Image (cartoon, rainbow, N blue to C red; front, side):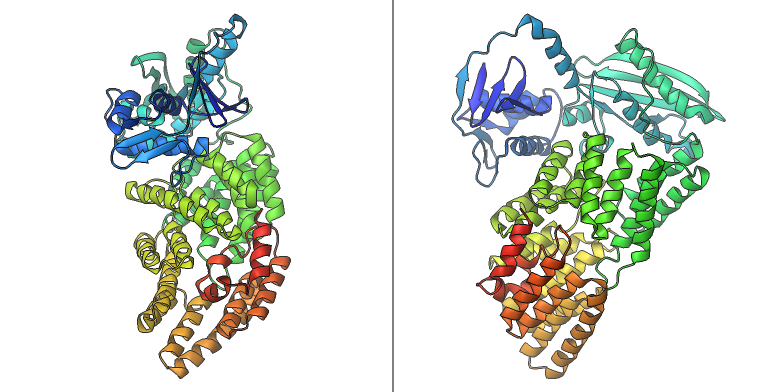
Length: 638
């Protein structure tokens, strides 16, 4: 049976979904979910029915089903807030609500069977789990992840599988508790690589097998042993043995693309451990990551990947200062220098170009950043990290497309929702921003509760500003409280978003006329960032409302001094602060002119994107006072 709905055609015989004759990439699990909903279109399909149909005999939570439905909606362009295709029936299940046409599928032509088989093989997902450290030797514990990364890279040379990103695998392990069956079901993986290693002195033995999950049988096995110093060659032998069993007549894998770029075991170990520190996004771990990457470079000065790691760690250190009136540009310069060094050492390394794009954005070099990110995607189109960096470097529709690709490859990457919402806010589309932020906040909360890699912050804060701009002060306060709970000081951006939340809280309380509480919130924000201009201005407004003329005057003088510093170090931010001061003085025309000029002078990209939801500009953005500014901002976001 072939199904048609909206612009889509679902061909059961060929196991594919098409839109305007173009194949939509869906995992087998999502295709099975869609087919089950289409088979029962118009009727309620309970959660229990879907769990039994999609994960027979496997104990998975409702979250796995909710995530699968979310991913399917994203692939179809469906909005859960106003669905066209899949409607949620609260606490019960889902219903496919679009009209569906059904026709008999044409039989597959004989001359197309081979190519279809090839496509089906390539849709079979394979996940590589961490290798088990059988002897429990703590000094070689890092190899558990290191070997899995290398085997993942080598398997990509085969055309039999689609190899899952290792970060998706590690997060599935955390979600499910780590059992082989549960991880495979969560990822819709047809095959899983499991392995172990035993170290005895200077020697190591590695065993591994590829398990077909539908039968539980090993379709390929490998066993190698040798010197630990030969670990790279030993890992290659593992995959070489897989290849000979899976593809008779093929005895080797092309080594033109490597998951590592060093012959040194010591450098490789330092690099691997550096990334494990960095991926926590814990500010306490960033110095440790930096030290590891620097050691890797000291051991092998031509190790391109180590320079990308060091550049990223240095960028994280810079980002901790980005909300200061004078950020630490020396750290940023060092980061850019190391990213450029990586590109110079290996121009074919996609990670080097993606890293350069990422760090250049913080230097406002958005044009070069965008080109570097596009080049990374062209070199390696299957990496969610490259699409994320392209989204970071681009703006408007290009960012939205990059975010769609990021989420298709990594559905649980919460910050992608923040990236998307920024565009909607700049365009003045607050309803769209709200929908995206609610989805992202749910993902963010799950990530943090599970201790996942890449925990995001900021989604509750931005959702609060969007709700405040729509006069829902009560929900705005609730979201700010939630953000403040999550924004722990040790998280990257934690101090910044705690300050932002306190400033937002003060703005909400001003709106409610609770000026003494507002003043206290602004004071608490200033304990975190003593020279934060907006909190200083908020304190001025609250003090003036309480009749404390001296405190109001002191806050105004301090804001003027801060503005002088910002004008030299962060001119766009200075213009926004200047507009706030003009808004407080009821000089709307001048505020509009200042912001228009700032947008005209700013480099391409997301400068001024928060203007439609800035609390201290609310009296102007509600009317026509900032029409020119908001129109110009929206146009930049196309």
